Length: 375
Image 1 (cartoon, rainbow, N blue to C red):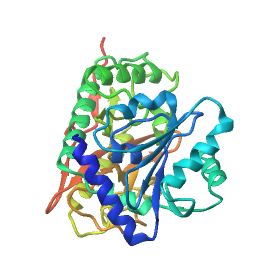
Image 2: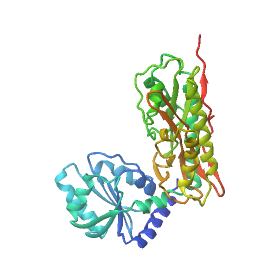
Image 3: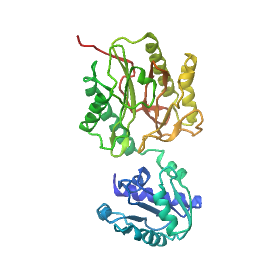
Image 4: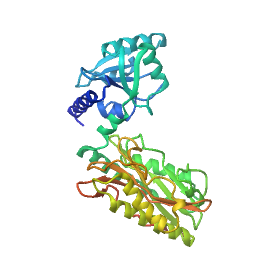
């Protein structure tokens, strides 16, 4: 992305701040800071805070070892660097806040991101500063994706699907969940994914598939097992998130049956997507199919979640989310049925809201694919 994009985003943030009563937004490393600057910082034992005041250039508080990251920026910032002596850090925070005219006033923060570490330094440097949530502002800015952002997500989906295609060849009886997950991670990187994946892949076999967020184990694949793979790739900092199911030979008839119900629920939800309806209507479309099939109690999570710079962001495709869908919003659709101690099925796609419908960014077959058992 060009530097002008980040300048425009910072200007838009300032225009939104005027309407909120906040005097600035303070961000520590994470997707919001990267969204506004293009810079990536790691969360570590040293604090990093970017402050975006209602007027003027951003102020950055960061360790000297990160100075190289700001040296080549084409947009202006006001850096405040600190050394390795923690006793001096509060003074650096104080000077930075004074430069941003924030000795008092209201600083917007992201509650689910800001650590106690940064909060303590902010309040220690400016005891009269009031911290309030800026989550609604950043959500408003990020939930409608630009053409470039959509292109990055399409590429992340393509990388993920190519990586799985080459990984499937290694799925044989006797392989473990960990082995397949490890192969998949390697293939994701080889196909071109950014190193920072949206999450470590979920690979589960048999009864383990009844746990939606299973962690890969040493469980061995056997003939007759269902296989669930939930994985994603990253491209230019934007994520894909996909789930598909397979079988090693023939399955128990009920597992075959619920796979069909979940596929139908996924299709119903995708067909329901259009601008102007609440997110809850998409959840309802998927949930109705599964309830009508008699498995409502076994579908106990939301139908999907927003997707972009985070694997989970707004909007949430939940029966409780009344967010009105707009063109450019991106999210997953991932209904599931989970039978305790027996097995589960989830089919997940990445969706973009268009001017009149929903467009799937993911294209892999949604059928329960039977893998051959070699003699």
